[in-house]
Length: 298
Image (cartoon, rainbow, N blue to C red):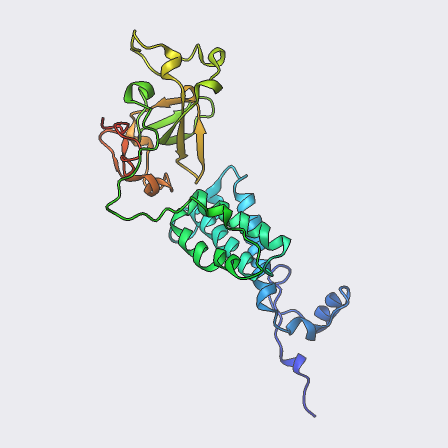
């Protein structure tokens, strides 16, 4: 008599017992779900396994953004925990798009979601999106959804000069702030670095709400009003996460204590800076051409 194949299988339950689970107990458990042990041994499809893993990564990323202690979520051998979560989420967006049936409502939602990811965090991957995803829209009868990347071609020949991002913002207008400076948020006390500036159109400027702001810049020019000099916002990155925020200058307090900046901080520093100058407590910007004369060394 040939023994049953089930008698030579080993089933482990690390959540309830320390050893092997008896076959009768396992059969009793799966019977509540109207299943059999044999059906559980069948291998799952690539689509089902990948989709479930992707959804679990999405849920973990959402939970990680709400945790007060991000280091408790992922302690890998290499890399920053926040960057690792962001990379995993980016790979998940690609996987869900590739596995989705093309030209369905869910497919279009996934593609728009991935487009936002690329434009915000991974502009260097624009060519992949254009070649392998948006190219499908060029087929006969396929809807054209290439609007998401029109005008957003980051590939540029090296000899071409970069246009200044905000050429109207002078050093006097943004004083005492500069690219690369380390600051502390006055209200929430989190550490960050300045990576850019945004000019505010005069029509949207609220004189009443900003008329009293003068604490961050001592020694204002007598010939230039405070409101003229404060029509801008500051783009920042956080020291302990991958968050990028645009903040009013009145909420920032520049610091010069280099001991507060450690090696594990600022996971997005390489996106904007070459290195950290510990003597001057500032980052050396690698986007000077976008903001002429607004670096911390000027």
